[in-house]
Every structure is written in structure tokens, then in C-alpha cells.
Image 1: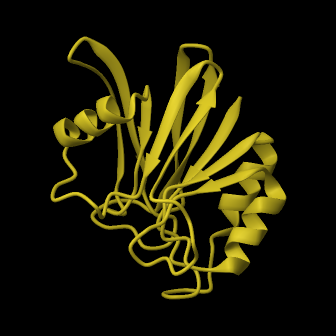
Image 2: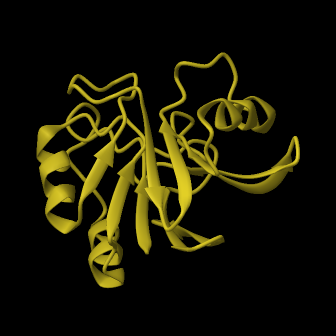
Image 3: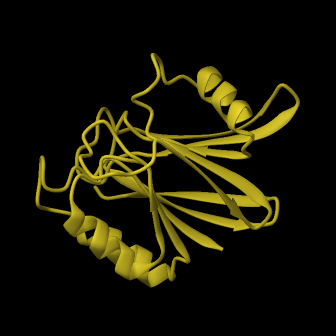
Length: 164
């Protein structure tokens, strides 16, 4: 299964622009699912992404739409958790790994920092993948980006897509 992963688009509150490469890659790769880790901020972008593939969104600190704080999805036998990240005092790998254990997930997708982060680690004897796709519109201290994640059973391949 190919999953498009995006966060912190801030469409409508900070920009009306969404880089065309986001839709080009999601449509071109034929993503089966899109996961948005919060701060989508507009119904228009929510609807547009939902036309590309089934869409699951969690609420970010700038979202006024009613999305859940957390989600857990089963994909190819793996549990994938989603949070935005604004709920935590710090967004370091150890704290996020504890959150993944608490949620009982194999993969934890988060946002909020607007910075790409990927780590595949063993934590307390359990494999945990942490992924922040970054922001395709307002990056902080790095490239504007989003991600493609291919899941086939226990095999997970993550590709950062840089907008610029």
C-alpha cells in the first residue's frame, strides 16, 4: 500500500498556495491513502485531497475544523498512529517513542514542527517508526517537504519528497 503523508499545510490561514508537486506525486504514485498530521486549516484543501484518495486527518493547533486529536489505522498488518504534536511539551524521539508505546502503534506520524524527521528504532524491545513529513508550504530550518510511505507487511519504505 502506498500512503501519502503530509502535515502543516496551513491552507487558508497562511497561504492559498499548495505546491503542485504534492498533487502530482500523490496522483502519479497512485496513493491508496493520504494521512494529514494536522494544520490542514481549510475545508477546500481537505476536499481536494479527499478526491485524490481516502483521507484521514488529525487536528492541529491551527485547525478550526473538527478532526480527532489522535487516530490509529491498521495498514498491511501494522498499526499506524497519528497525532499533530502540539499537545506535548517536547517533540523528541524518546517522548514520541513513549507515545507510540502508549498508543500501541508500530508507526507514529506527527507534525507541528514543520521539519522532516524519520527514524526507525528499537525502543524498549519494540520496533517503532517515527515520521514527520515536514511542511510543503512553511518549512522551518529545512526543505519544504512531504512523504510517501510504502507498506508491505513489516516492510516500510519512506521517501521524503522535497518541494524545493
